Length: 185
Image (tube, rainbow, N blue to C red; front, side):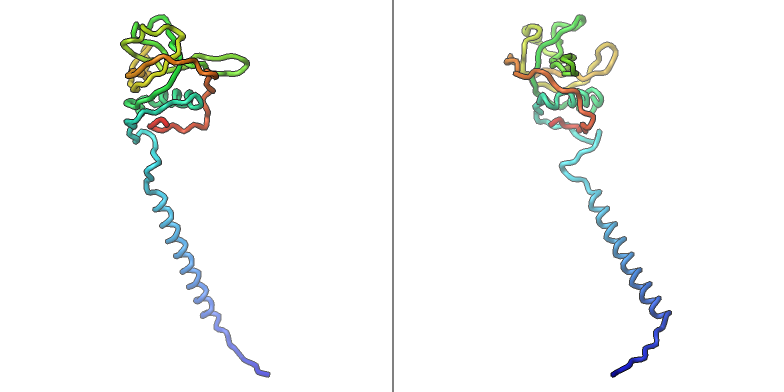
């Protein structure tokens, strides 16, 4: 039987454990700073707020996101000026519109078999050629204008053609979770 007599030096053990803990803490801090700095690098597919540059491509607005986009454009006109869009709706006119103005409208379903008319104010030299409530497909560019002393987006139409009324002509209420971007897609 072999017996060892070991005398432990408490100060040496404390210094060793403290040194190891210090090295671990420093390593964790360096790794955390590295991860934080790499996550702050801008990614190509992410754009935030007003720093976005509107796309020169034409964004096709679908009925599912129509009201979300309409709401976002009205709330952030400056961000979307110059954006080219394409969508369909029906011609809606109210008193006070000039011959070259109409709203390209959709009916927004608000429940209980009720709808509200929503849409973009449009400007087009051939607007008077299209009768009220006729369905059209348009392409145009978002500009900033005024109506009843309020700043609103006005769509300058570059292409317009008649189309058939879709099976489901209503659009949903805007989604609160929608995150607007400067480019509509």
